Image (cartoon, rainbow over all chains, first blue to last red; front, side):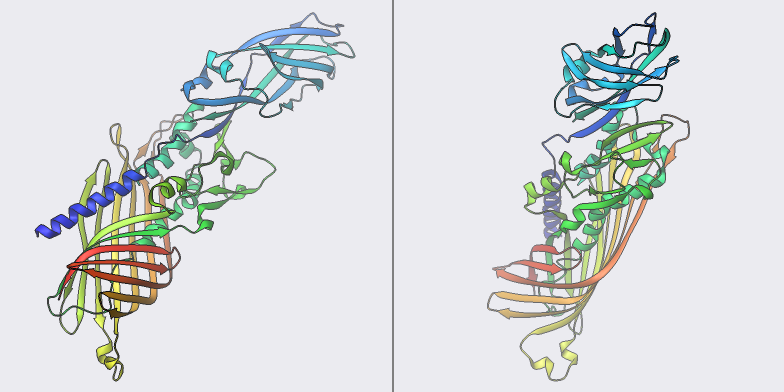
Length: 165
Length: 335
């Protein structure tokens, strides 16, 4: 009986060692892709203008649970649309930036149908912005023809792709 | 193993929590999806156990004399085939889970014993109540296993006692009462019979080797508490039954015995996630969300050597089967 107990102890030791050896010292990483909307930007009194400069902020604190675990984060795409615009679309160049980071600077056609603009991957890391909990956004545009509406909204949805662990 | 299971099941919910979804929400979205995903993801673990615990029953075809005895510790590793390191995810098989890359209709995702590298884990989009979030598919843990035991295998271990009865027949018993280590419980029971058939075959019984027939059954029950402190009812249970029937031959050469066997093996593994999982969107909890059954049978051929060093018998064998299995035993034998 003593030998059986000894063997049982040895077995348990082997089992415990085997199990414990499977501990992972490295953290497991995940890519998480989520989107957030910024508050619709009300645009009034710009009818006939050929340029505009808007700014707003988005509260992204809900994305920040365990923010210290973020490894990197970048904007994957931005969807832009108009609401209650009296014309068909706004054509021209648009530049969307946050602080010193410029996400895109290109010619687009903005209408009431959201159009997703893809941001090149690996270019801009927004980790420092995410950690502040507030996402400031600046939108500058030069349009042709001139803006047709005098009271409408511009809506932006950011898709953020982050590596977390 | 506890780390693997909890890591696999909870890594998901931990990550998802970044976007205010949780495991309960995913289950609520579609319990069938969760079962389907888990079936592919956990298959190597369940099948590996079913295949691995068939090793080490014998290290010779020679039966004991009456009341002869052997006791040994058995350690096995069922090697996970490379094609079982991933499983095919088809969009059409799922309701609320889709590949994030809309240009794909199917993709290979890691199993629990596959890769953990981000590049090998396509993003999946989870939809729930009009919202959605995409996250990497679950990680595999093959590198951790390889780093620690040298190969990607499902480990198992047990104790076995063999006793010589009458007419050159051995009774073999595997038994470990329920043991608890941290939050992990397991128990083992197995029984086998080996009978010398050479004695019944005229002419053959004079040949200088041993030949026996063997049949064995092993059951391993294990349970892992997912959250012992806060949700002690949430548990992952793995109940594995395995059978093996073989013809076994051996030849003793000085202190060395070469043995081998051919026959069949079969297994039935039931894996369940039990407990009450609350959801964030309704007051209806999900109870016992995942129940999976794995069965299989295949031919089994093994070859091994047993070395006798004073009173110790040390053996090693390699079995060719669905998951090839390496087994090592240490013990002693009397009569």
